[in-house]
Length: 215
Length: 215
DNA sequence: CGTTCTTTTGAAACTAGTCAAGGCCGGTGG
DNA sequence: CCACCGGCCTTGACTAGTTTCAAAAGAACG
Image (tube, rainbow over all chains, first blue to last red; front, side, top):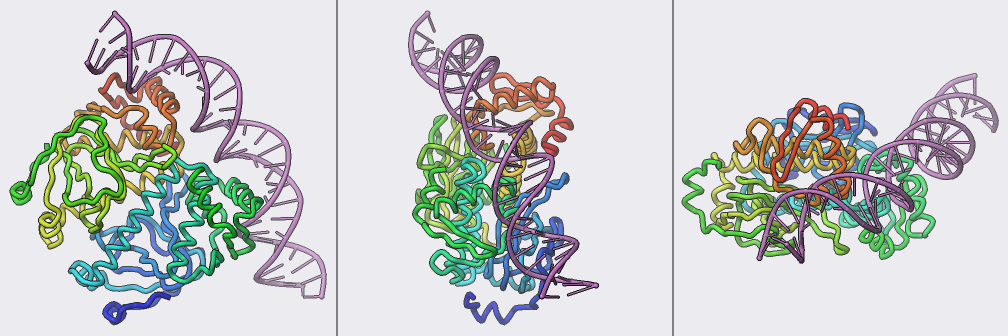
């Protein structure tokens, strides 16, 4: 778990417990507080009236859930958020947070760094969805998650807890669950990854990387 | 053309003239100045080593070209920028701009509003690429552009100058040029749009909207 | 006016989607 | 302890949307 500086820690408001598979923030909700993911997995998504949905980003422990809203004060959330596993979520008052982060200093730099990464990841995802095949998209997603998890010491040489269902991957990658399955199977056949239940293991990172780049 | 407040106007550094079809900013470039599009069309894009490319966003007169870099001070640009038509581009010193926009006030609100819109559009584009058919994507793009142009008085009841090539649309929508052509043709057959050269006309906005939402 | 770039059209090939059924596991209750 | 149930993963056969390749027809440019 990431070290939380005292300055922020002292302003923490409360910790929420959220059950698995709950949409606990809905697009259009007024946001009075900033949410941060303390433990568990979740995702941001948008729903199209007819039922289709697109996952915008997966959230792992240590991620800010409503990061962008912080920087661009808005009254309403531009996406919904759903838990995958059970969660612990911390909330902070939005005023405190803005004051703290909109003046130069460590917090400002840390936050703007995270914003930058988040926007950069969005750009990459646009490239994935627009210009990569199913194989490439799956590979990119696995690599992105592995690298983010590793940065938080939640992946030990390519092995990590992975509670994301194939249906969720499909909604993130713009594919159908069935095809995600076939694609993952293809990677497994080639001994590039292995997985069972919620245990994901990347066996051959270089191979996965070259699949990710070339497909 | 949008009215430029004196406060910003007085700090303008210089105006650049850029020829059509020039990649005048490259991913990885160090950015010492803020670029704003004064006239003409351009787009932000990312290039994959093997030649494929993905357009992230089209830029129309009045748009900030390097908006996100302003808010997340970074040394390098995360995408390239290419002109479609000839351009006039204004540049400002990045220091001036940050000072001006990072303290509360009109400029701050205006800028964070634009940032918010830009991120919101990125989210929508992810939904488009992930979950919509070719027809839906084309419709969404045309509607988005018409609405942005209208906000700047560059569209008169659905008619506007449209210098974007079908190949560019393809790279923005994650399709092939050939299929963009067929798709646009389909919209034309149904008398929803008409276009000739660089003149685009949306004949039936409600119809286009329903195509955009349902496909 | 020839050259080049963009749009348009046709036919064949392929990637990914759809529909449907079976298998595996974890949980629950008898 | 075992049978049943519900989720999720897996597999198969078929379909559809999109790509690819190729070539022709229109505009734009010098």
